[in-house]
Image (cartoon, rainbow over all chains, first blue to last red; front, side, top):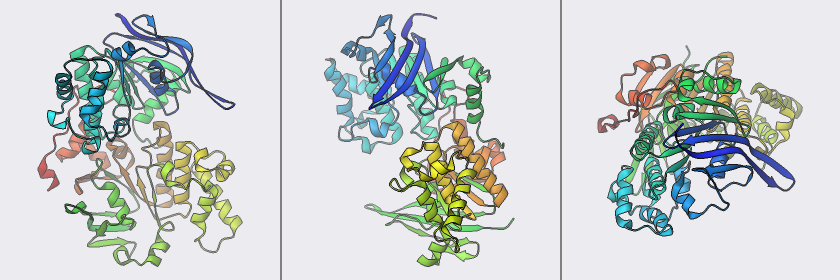
Length: 253
Length: 277
């Protein structure tokens, strides 16, 4: 493996509410190399999204360390962290402010991080995700789901991050639109040498996008696989085998 | 095969500021005691087709058809009393998300019993026993607990199974399932499909399975209608989906990523304005 970009070691996330404690993530660890695309697969409640949120500092970590380029991350995360790491959320219908235009969505991160040449950058970001300048002054309700997700990707990329955390980026989209967004993400990664950590419940999407992946169940990583192993259906654990066969569609009992 | 449902030239129209907008434009098919899949993308009119069959087109929308016949009953002219006798008892619908379609302030048991209330002169105890048996039939392990539970106390998969139980407890002849498994995990999805499959085979129920997931539909249904912009663009046997003729169907099949690896970039769907005509 080349230079390790992001490393997660024995991560624990515990939510406490009243007398209840929920251990959402239990001792998950993985390394992601620069330029690699890493996948996290699991069913709802397996803690896969919580791992991403913990990396961003959006979930309470109760144990373990997260390092970016070898440096442990302080809490709360500094502004430089968000320059390097950005996240794209699942539902473009919920993650864009309904009363902000595309222009405002894209210019806010630029203002926060004190970027220059904002005009140019906004137009460039829209072009990169395949939207023309005519989209710049539209509101989210004037965009289709796929266009919204493109805006969300543009928002994440406008800070020129090195790592993109993708939380089910296409699960709210139609199959044909999903293909377009996946192609876009693939192309951007190749062009810019981005590092991806992608969470999905869809094995086929992860097999298409990611070089390596872990399978999570009940907050723990049960198996680590390469794309080749997944494609050849070489799974070691029963749970992964079950996921694989369920992804094939319906089979009479 | 006996024909259960005949639909001919079904149209659903919604008034908009720009004039009436037709979202279902002349859909026709017949259904026997089989599993019919309707696939299409969002906005293709597949859900509105399902709702129109049950007379549930939301106002101000209007549904019209040349023929809409369910087991000899003309649904176009059905009175409110006829609908009451049919809906629930003989034809019912499973919606996509149990979170939004179960009553949050009623226990599952109460909702199940309500479905049975219009049944033929049963005692409460008999109805209760039937409700519990149905919960068991949809693979709920602890039916007594679920019977007493409120919807928020159940997981998504359990809620969806409870809803399927509610729709099936009256043993309908026709079940319209609108994306019944889209909100569920893949492993739960397979279990829910098994339940539906068994009901079709054992009770001879007719099933209309509405979904955006072409791969799932092709593995589960007997026949598939592919809808685009309110029309049926192709009808074929599910097993022959690989031999689909229409470029839209083929495009939908090809743009899905595959676990076994495939081409990259993924082929995208080039839409042709002529398909909508």
